[in-house]
Image (cartoon, rainbow, N blue to C red):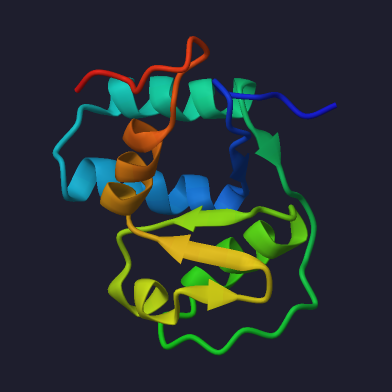
Length: 120
């Protein structure tokens, strides 16, 4: 059974967690303890796609291939990324590719359970 984070299901893979850890430390300077806690939380509240993919994806950054393949294998509807090469693709099979800001804007525009829009 898949776990649901809020009203959205988060699909991850080991390669994504490795990339996230690298980014949180190198780009954002987060302490290792916080990074370990984030990774642990993602393990608890996400659907982990395991196994090798046979999906062929042409990307310049080969480290993005297994992450993108996992999204496709996990039947994700939306792939949220800050990666400019992936964002320029916008769609891969049924997978829509959006920036974190685009996804956030969509979430803000959705009515909540009472039919109101979420306040900013």
